[in-house]
Image (cartoon, rainbow, N blue to C red; front, side, top):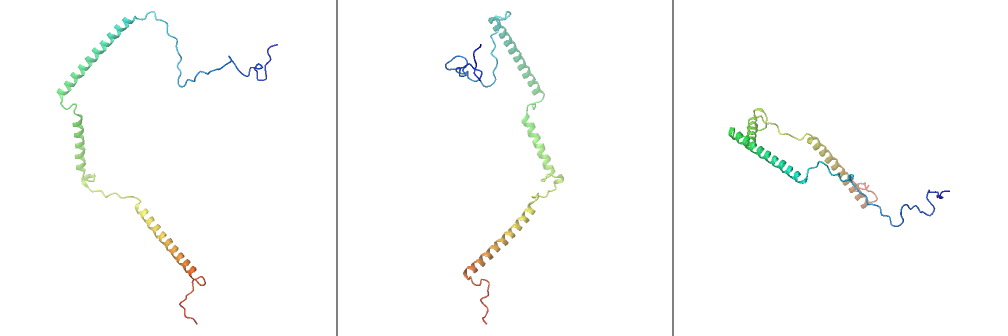
Length: 176
């Protein structure tokens, strides 16, 4: 027969250990995107030699520099030609100032209130202030009534405490 297994499916006496005995250290967890590690590529057969590569890069770099110099000189020539045609071509601030002056002239022609012909506009008022003020006055009146009732109640309590026998009798009546 084969080795007997316990109910947990393990050999007796193994205590659930797998692998070698002793201290078992887990590899550290890696967080984030894990890119697969590629094996180094085999040497290319038609790969240029290092010296040839440097020369090729130099010639490409020199050609790029020549092209950029040509582009710079062409841009400078275009700028000079534009300035020769019109001196205010690159005067952006002057154009903006002229636009703002034209706007001001238009506003002054409309008048102080901005209407046609300078008709003065009625001053704007808050829409709901009148109803708010009325409600405030009503609340003040009600608070005054409540305060007066409290004062009357306190006065009655003072009379009751000073003369407990007859708090509301008229003492000025002549005796019969």
